[in-house]
Length: 233
Image (cartoon, rainbow, N blue to C red; front, side, top):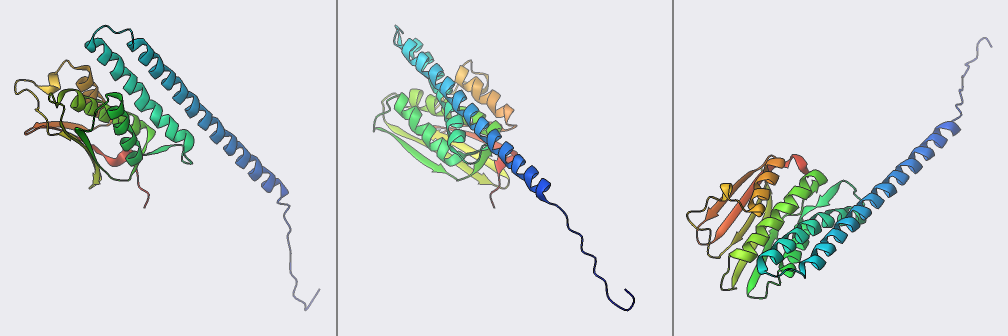
């Protein structure tokens, strides 16, 4: 109409958009539940393997064979801990490294029945890492702790320390003891020990570097960049 302002109002039917949104949310929830169930089943399978190794170890007739079973049992359990935490977590991709390392260290000490004369010190930053980083890091810590508990204290007394620190876009892991130290003629990087071979291979897997210092005890230092570390700031 001439001389009057006209307003054009366009109404959109958003019911289809809302329906699609609900379908996407439902699909996401179903996928998260499925992923949790997968982590739960993987954890259960690894614990079954660990239990079978424990049962089989009872037939071991010597201490060396028993140690082999115990070490394999602990490796399976260290991986099972990862999947258990993912199953119980709201975050299905990342692991609380501090909590994980503390639990893992306690499990290793329990497995080897390390008495009160071997003390465990923990100094672990709170940080999150992705699954691809958490599994090899967990296995590295497991191997280094096992090595310390088994070999560092022939008289059964001493201290093992575990440190996980984040600095300048790097993560530094140290497992140290005040025990007898490595034999001076032993090159740990060429050692035939399966545990030390795993440490080397797993360090390469996370693009890290490994260093051993034997001076009034033994210290292993593992350093890797924080590409697998989640920044929560």
